[in-house]
Image (cartoon, rainbow, N blue to C red; front, side, top):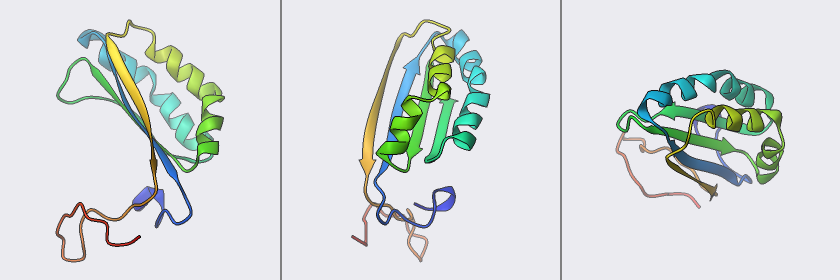
Length: 127
């Protein structure tokens, strides 16, 4: 992957978790703020964490968006047993949920969005 995620995925099967939690609009920002240090700790202390973001959706005042990237299934499994995982769940359950979903995705290829000419493309040019 590019940037913070390294030069590429060769030999890696990155796992992404993409999800959301819906809460009362008046609770959303408080819940997100309560996870900031846990997000930092997860990124800093858990091997294999490439990204861990819990943020307010800028369009939906009830929605908390969740984006995680892990360098392997093993690192994600370790996260599911880590105190940060449990503490984050507790923090996000401090207000009733109105809905939510989280899905995991296995990613086996990555390339920059823009080519050398600066044109954006959905195509993958390498295998």
